[in-house]
Length: 110
Ligand SMILES: [Cu+2]
Image (cartoon, rainbow, N blue to C red; front, side, top):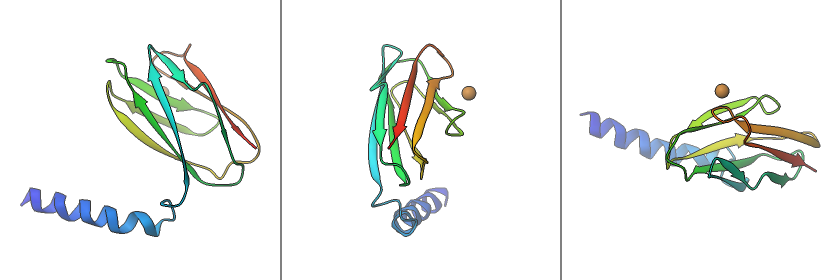
């Protein structure tokens, strides 16, 4: 019963996703390794939606956080998250790992 529900939800997810307009959005990747962001600076087009895929190669959890972007999302050790962002006005948007705040990076929208 539960399995069937999960299957239906998964199917709905694949059907609904393209309708949101996300499918054609540009995608960027960010890796957390040795408790640092790679890359620490990402350039994106201003005024356009995009996705940011964050993979944590460390064993300890991280939290992708940005007051500038109004986002906060845990990335478990070995895990990957997708963050939906934009459209952003031209500018610089700082992000950091809230579990290790020395790890910082910036998104530059141009
Ligand atoms: Cu936080």
